[in-house]
Image (cartoon, rainbow, N blue to C red; front, side, top):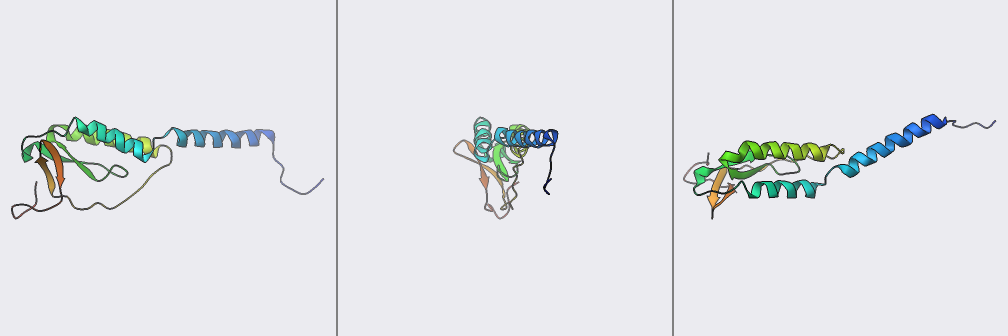
Length: 126
């Protein structure tokens, strides 16, 4: 009998099943591009405005950016959707981190909420 590693058929089957499940989870989780596109589509119907006061920042996290300007009535819905998308993205073992640039608030530009990264009127936006 030669020296070497011996395995049982049951052990090999468990290892291959575990590997298959792991690969399936990674294959089933959405890509960064997919979650970004889904959030952009979700926000598109929730970022309308008439005046700056209509807008607020919805806080998100990697890979969706740090925040998005939306109509203040939809902040919670956008943050909930973003959390759901990040959870889906991370379910396959994906993840990321980054530091966020400072935002001064949200403003209305041509009927659409936008992130303000500059001070106005001598102070930051709310």
